[in-house]
Amino acid sequence: MTAARERLTVIIPCLNEAENITSTVEAVYALVPELPVELEIITIDDGSTDDTPAVLRALRERFGIQVVTNERNIGMGRSVMDAYALIQPSSWVTVLPGDNEIDARSILNLLELRDRHDLVLGYLGNPVIRPAGRRLASWAFTTFTGALYGFDYRYLNGLKLYRVEVFDGIEVFSSGHAYTAELIAKAILRQPSIRVGEAPFIARGRATGQSKAIQPGAVVRAVREVLNGYRSVSSHRSAVIRRDQ
Image (cartoon, rainbow, N blue to C red; front, side, top):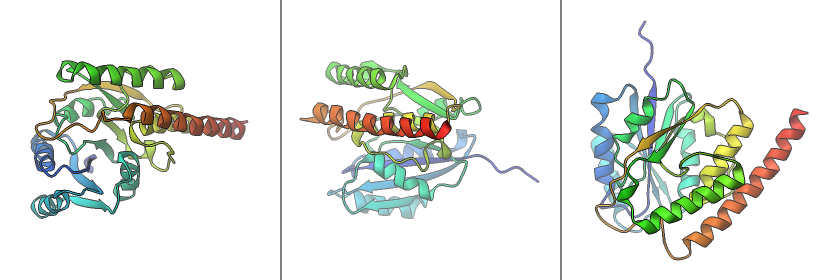
């Protein structure tokens, strides 16, 4: 009997990405001949107000992908967590934003580490692609968050690869970019033996539209959400310590 192949689920969340989502999905499917795993794609329309829903319907007809539609915008973190209910146990998961800014071939870099790690965090392999302002904001966020949580990872909000069980069932209270740090912290508290690795991913910049990473008020919101997440992790840590005693 032939052993079942491992499965990779690529979650592609998007918000008003009608001009970019097709190229994002096509780039993932172009990897199929090189993938050492079976591929499944789940796209999430997070309350788009442009033609994204129509484009996703066309992609579903063309590729047979799953399409999840949020009636309102709930954010990437909550959208991804809700999608876990659709993923088969023991599947590998990666989240690729629908703006086509990340080179989908970077998924191959992370997959190379799957035999030795349960969670692979991607760090930007070509930071010069991004303007100095965005690099500075990213550095400040990573440094501030790392100091709070005691993390020494190079990057928190890039491409990742993980077994669905690593994060499945964890409740997250922060939103935006802050949810990843809260999620990782709670996963480690739940299972301290999680093997965490790091691998580079490549960004190429947006072909169309503006990045949603840095917008007016985004820094203030990010700091507030990081603190919200940390308060939740602190409560969770106390509960874990009491339970283990």
